[in-house]
Image (cartoon, rainbow, N blue to C red; front, side, top):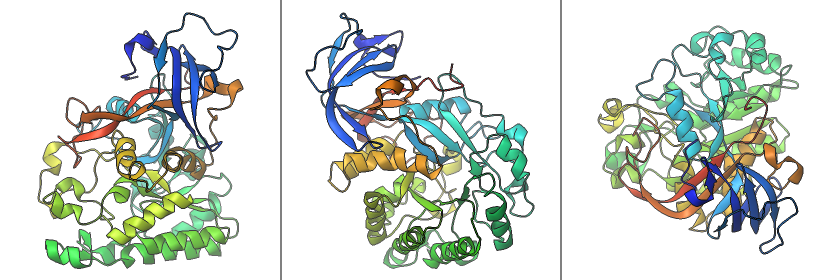
Amino acid sequence: MASSFPSRVQSHGVPVGLLQGVRLLDPWQGRDQRVDVWLEAGQIQAMGEPGMRRPEGIPADLPTLDGSGWVLGPGLVDLYAHSGEPGYESRETLASLAAAALAGGFTRVGILPTTHPVLDSAEQLGRYPRQDGAPDWWPWAALTLGAKGKHPSEWGELAQAGAIGFTDEQPLRSLVLLRRALEYLHVWNKPLLLWPWDPQLAGSGSLYEGVWALRLGLKGIPADAETAALARILEVVRSVPSPAPVHIMRLSQARSLELIQQAQQEGLPVTASTTWMHLLLDEQAILEQDYNPNLHLLPPLPKASDRQALIHGIRSGSLAIATDHRPYTYEEKTLPFAEAPVGAIGLELALPLLWQNLVESGELTALQLWSALSLHPARCLGWEPVPLGSAADWVLADWVLFDPHLTWTVSASTLESKSLATPWLDKTIRGKVLHTQLGKTKGRG
């Protein structure tokens, strides 16, 4: 487990000591306060108000470190990321993906079935066992064989084999198949992960229609490529008695957020997320960064007004944040903007850049951001982790120590990911995870 936690409070790479005055963020209990934390063998042994007396049973010789300015929070949860292994190890191996996740504070990561072969069998799901020193992998099984959108995969077998849920990652072509999945997967209480996107409406465009598409000379995509597809999905969900839970991925528009909130108010089992880059950047960034191919995304970067709506969705708790981490080799991404494959990496960059740009600016509170990266994605999957404030279970808790003031330069030598597909390459950013601790849960030893 990679860590830059100060060596004087480590024992064989495991944090020990008293952290004085660290800022605790615990979304499960709504806590944002200064605390003293006693660590031994990497586990939280006690926690209390700053200056409190050392609890009984805590060794008197523990070293002390000033934790003021640092943030302690539960491990982050990523709903969906792409793994290069198997099939695309030149982009990312499972080892580099694990290192990148831990370096970014993520202790649980949803793996999309975009591997080769596709994750459409129990054997393929078995590639992602829980291992000591690695995040908990949550593999999404392909909804259809080969993720081709035609023939259903073995849903029951895959559910029993440990699939967190089902998705083809690509837009679902058949509403008949969607209805069937909503009916059948209700028995297993496994969510469907759906991307609302109409490829025919989108065509070969690379930016939403409007002034910026014209100014940049890029082929436009109508907004209803997302909103019409989302409306169709929600209508089918409404029509099914007791449907399986649905998670809508990659939301990028204000109108889409309105549709999601309406569905939630009706009591439909629907949750949603946006990606971290859609919260940080709007379409103007393409000009500012000289058509950087790492800004070529689908859905494309939003208009400024849509980006603000997405931030409001985070504030209201209507949206979770996902990285949609998508590694590519340098050669794959070194193409003209509209020809480059879509996507970029994000596991190591999401927390520091979101904090730097949205928390420090006052657009989000620290607790709102940490909730959208931990509490909300966990609940989208029906999972409730151990709260950091639950003294009886501290040994089970994942936690992250984050320094929002530490500056570093994004480069091949500082990134754990094999991929350098990010528009922040060679740029100095502020905020870095000092240590990510995995709790002692079943399967971790």
